[in-house]
Structure formats: C-alpha cells, structure tokens
Image (cartoon, rainbow over all chains, first blue to last red; front, side, top):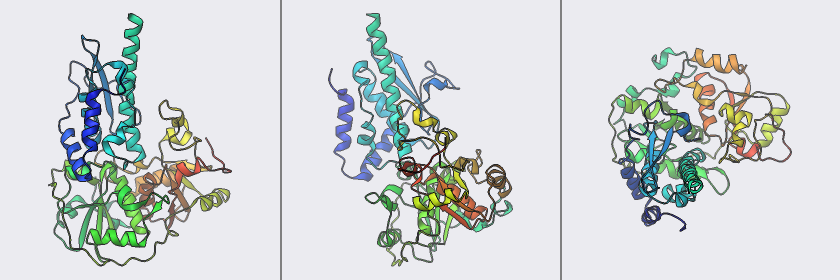
Length: 151
Length: 287
C-alpha cells in the first residue's frame, strides 16, 4: 500500500510551494471557509463524547461514514467559533482522505499538521490538530480491521 | 458583566473595554495589538488598525529558549510604530491568554503603558464590531528600550526550587488532569513535553480560565477572584507567589490577574514551567 493518499500528498505539495507565510495563511483561511459541519443524518447535537477529539481545545468532533465501496467519508464539527485552524484541518482531512483506502488513511503521519501549518504552532494547538489526524486514523484503522475480519 | 471600574480591581486601568477601544481606533497615542494562539485568526479579520504580535515569531528566541533581547524588542516596537509613550492595548483569542502573554513579555522591558481589552477578540466579534483584513502600516518609531529586566516578573528554576524549599506559595494553572499527572498517560499523548507527570510540590491548582466569566470572556470581579485565589488557594496579598503552567503562557494570564486585578506586588511567572520542571534531574514532584 502506498505511503499516503494521493490527494493528501498533492495538497501538501501545493502548500509546500507557497514560500510566503502570509500567502499560505490566506490559502488556509480560504480552505477553512469551505468548512461544512457534519450533516444531520450522521450526527446531531449534543454530539457524543466518543467523537470528541482529545486535546483539541476548539472542541472538534470527527465521524466516519461507510461508503458502499468499502471506503469512508469523514465528517467534522468544530464548536469553537474562532477555531479557524481546526476548520482548515477538517476540510483538508475530509477532502483528501474521504474515499481513500482505509488501510492507507490509517497510516497518515500525525506530522502532516506541520506540513500544513508550518512549525510555528503552540504545543497545545499542535496537539489539538494532531488529535484530529489521530482520530481519523483510528476510525480508518477500526474500519480496516473490521473489514479484514469479516472477509 | 459590570463595568470595569465597578469590579473592585486594584488597578482597573490595566483593562480597557471594547467600547473604549472602539473610541480610540484612530488615536495615534494608542496601538492595538492582536496576539493569538491560532495563527490564522489575525489574517482572517482583526480590529481596524490593529497589528499582530505573534509569540513564536516576535517574542521568542527559540535557540536559547528565551525571550527576545533589547535589540529585538526595539525592532519589534519600531515595526509596529510604537514609542515609549504609546499605550499598547492587547487582545486575542482564548480569553486573552496570548494577549496577557505578550503583555507580560512587554513588562520585561518596562513598557508600563500596556492594557488588556477585556473579553478579548471574541467579545469584539460577538458585539458585531468592525473587523478588517487590511494590514496597517505605521511609520517606524525610534523606540529605545532598557535592557531586559527579568527580576520583577520572571522566575527561574533555581529560584523556584528555593521557593519550594521555603514553602512559599505556587499556583499551577494547568487543567486538573495535567496537575495530577493523569494526562501524561493518555494514549497518543505520551509525554506532553515532560518525562514525569504531576506538579511542583506545594502548588495549588487553579486553572487559568476560572478567572474569566464563561459567558462573555470578561474578567471576574475582584471579589470573585479573591474567592478563588485567597479562598481556594489560600494566597494572601503580601505573598511572594510563583505561577506556572506548561511553558509559561497560560500562567501569564494568572500573573496578570494577581498583579493587576488583585494588586499583588510580588508575583513571578515561571516560564520554564512543567516542560522544564517535569524533566529536571534532582527536583521533587507531587502527584
């Protein structure tokens, strides 16, 4: 299985080509503006605790919805109205990892956070964003394991 | 929440309201500074005329794990067009956590004309006040700073060890889970920047955000704050107090509360905090 889903690799590549910090920030803000909350068919408030990302102070939630082809759609909620980085991360993870092989999603490295935002993040912010990646990975891992044991 | 001057603070002038800021947007003697944890927020829209001071890029010396030196501070103040007479008003996300951190660093250089906007960024936004993406440019100033003086408001590890040995009070402003060391054992977060979990012996745990009103992010009244720090944590105004968290950012918020809102005269922020103490050889911890 390849290392990283192509769509995520392409997004990281596009971000890496932006050398200017202000331009990168603008691109991430534009991405965050595309954020759409988890649809009601998947979850409604109050969101269950088990979907809450640990250590994310923006109160981010993650869900995985199965597709007929055996892959997953990832959905997010971000309760902090100022949680703009969490929203950008959610859009990137949702766009690039939904529909990708769960085995591959389960191996996405947590440090993609730094490749998206750069190294100038507080420890708390890094942990929260990495927590989102980690939650997506765990959901993909569970799904992949369940598929394997069913086959 | 009540008016700032009605809350019984020792130094109410350290705070300004969103109304006050709205009335001083074009005041050349005032520089409004946004400091956030989230690196995207300022660029997504800020108070008109506000400049950004970013703690990782503007305030830290990552090579020495230290703060900027006199030359660095002068360069920063020149960039934002501030003089020694400029009133700098800080505001930001996360209940002004990062704004108070920047405010505290400015005190290392004795820039006393510093204020915090009560309620921070979210109060401004929730009140429907204007924001802009336009980044202002101010003529460079000729700011001359004194040498950095850490002695008044900053504590170092050896001082903290002596502080512990002489049983003087400390406030740990981290979450209860960090205070007990439980968080170190959470899956996926094995180290939290420290080898050991727990707290500095003798510290009382008052999480920093308890100092603000959960509804609108403004600071609680002096009476409510005294109930926390003097009631629960048993501090007395004449105490020599050390505050700390993980790297000294959250505790700068509590330093601000004790020093400026309650008027304590000897409060120091231990910015080495748990990432240093939790890893130090030969110092005790409690769980």
